[in-house]
Length: 108
Image (cartoon, rainbow, N blue to C red; front, side, top):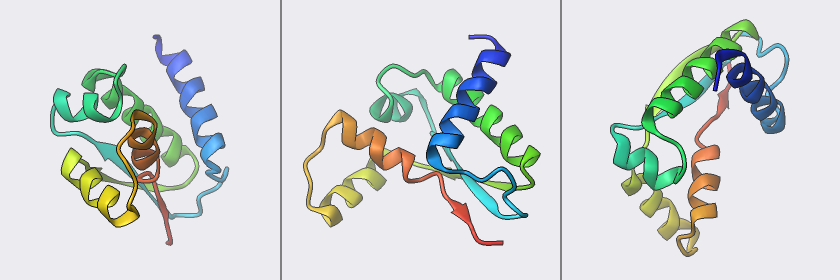
């Protein structure tokens, strides 16, 4: 995927998440993974390199919308704690749902 297509994909994703055009100095948390195995646990078809490219494009988009960024490293143990708290079963769809909720727009 080239940079223009990635940027377009990230813009669509951000709009789907409801990120505003002007984030007014707020902070957007970005998801990182420590290694390829952790990335594959959450995104079966995404490599760690692809995830890093997505995160970089999202960070650039956030800054263009007047936001700061902060990184949070997520691993399967975080997910397992969430599963127990939510009292739900593990599914591939739920893993992606969990990760998508880690991208948060925090107050200024």
